[in-house]
Amino acid sequence: MAKQKIKYVCSNCSFESPKWLGKCPECDMWNTLTEELVETGPKRQPTFNHPFKAVKLNDITADEEDRIKTGINEFDRVLGGGLMPGSVVLLGGDPGIGKSTLAMQSASRMKETVLYVTGEESLKQIKLRAARLKISSENFHVMAETELGTIISGIHSLSPAVVIIDSIQTMYRSELANSPGTVTQIRECTSLLMEEAKRNLFSVIIVGHVTKEGIIAGPKILEHIVDTVIQFEGETKHSFRILRAQKNRFGSTNEIGVFEMHEDGLTEVKNPSELFLSERGAQSTGSVVTASIEGTRPILLEVQALVTPSNYGNPQRVTTGFDYRRLSILLAVLEKRANARLSATNVFLNMAGGVKIDEPAVDLAVCSAIASSLFDKPADKNSVIIGEVGLGGEVRSVGHIEKRIQEAEKLGFTRIIIPQNNLKGMKATPGIEVRGVSLVTEAMRLILTTS
Image (tube, rainbow, N blue to C red; front, side, top):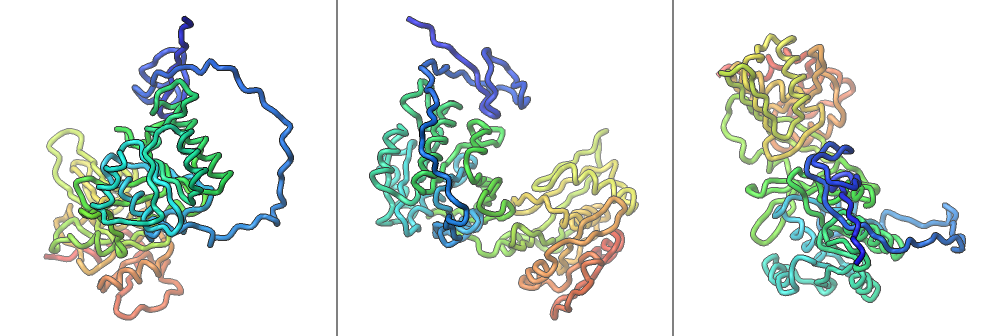
């Protein structure tokens, strides 16, 4: 009996090695090499006798109206307006975050025919979940299968507009000797689904598991195969979830969708600003409000900071929802330009609501929250603070300032502090005071009030 050949493949970057290694030399990740069988069958020789099928660009018809609406506005927003026919969408997230719930709810609301393929649950389990979610649709078809050849046959028979695969880790191709969930099976199954989607112009939503490191299980090349990569974020202990596009060939990657989890499924949050500020307590130190732009949507959120004396040699710097390196820069600016002694203090920073913000327009709010906690002076609770902070302590202008001001006015704030350069050419807004600042120290004098 011939001995089977074995190779070791990295589940993060698809690096292949003839022997097992504890650390992948390609991506420097530990314990990511998994054992797989080497396909020893005869290699298929390429053929070059296919007919020439090039088409003039002007003869191709494509319209934004061709998109398939999922029936969930927040989902459509992140996708760029809906599902594009022939596209492949990878939906990832932590276990229990609500990936299958979102997929089933969107499938039940689509007007087109949808085929939901489950490899982890039986048909009765799907029915029970649908009853719990109170969903029902004549266009919603369910298939419990894991062999991809059978699934493709079912797709050809039904001709759906959308196919949902839940999840890709359970699917396998029978002609491959590797087990389901291995790098080879995941990659080959996704490639075949992509080929069928492009050829027959149906959309595919692939649900993918996330590893302990927070990456989508399977090779990194999987993200290069698909057209859109969407991450479902949030804490399972909290009720709200955030849908964020990490890659999108048919739309922006800056849009986010906000949902709240209930017993009967996910509900859209049409006003995220109100949600993120709903639990804001009484006026206290270390709390300020800022306005961020996520895609085309302005969002108001609370920035919380806590500064405490350090009893050890190295003070702690802990951030949630904000870049750690950016915080280090802002602390250095405060110490040098604003005479704020922070080298011997612990600094804890939190973007309330679980939102991850990487926009420089929240710099001034971060500095103000830290100064408020350091000097034990509460910030003005009716103010919204916006601005990028430079290394010289200057406050730099930001974009979309009108949208931010309108969102602040909508939620009842009476004063907004913005960079001085943003005041140029701005029309007066009745009901809200707009103040311009050019230095971080000037902003701190305006914001901090004596209690």
